[in-house]
Length: 226
Image (cartoon, rainbow, N blue to C red; front, side, top):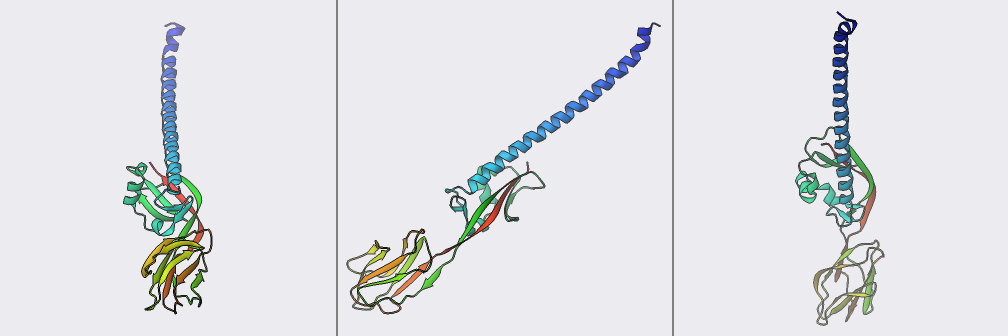
């Protein structure tokens, strides 16, 4: 047997060992590449969904980066999938300050994107103001609001023709106003309501409901796991 023939078995063993190592290396590389791809996809979806949740036109937001507290708290998995189709057939969790709002599928890990937002809640406050004694009787609301509901029940013989908010006519009827109406006002300034009537409006003639907001900072988290 020549030296070359004698070394042949050793060469074959070395080649087999090299092939096996190469195969393991390829498998690990493919698995790592697949994981990186999945992570990148999850990152993209989580980022996109977190952005859409807080956009001004989001059904969960009052304005950009300000979530509506009531809408957010009542969010369900079905609504999340319906409002944001990108969530369908994926495991996604949306949380606020570590409290899960809605979750689709099973989320054991995955990629999480967090952002600081404001959460706004509005509560109805009703007052029965004592108005002045002149023909233009007014009340200034103590806090800002986006809407005001005015209930008018003037006494017999007294007609309320116009209601103004900070000088702007929001209600008018020459034959007289009565009943309940809701009007929009600026949330950027305190609202002063003026009631133009033919006579003094005694207490109880006007009831005003306004909707001041309370906001707090919170952390919105979107996790995508597969």
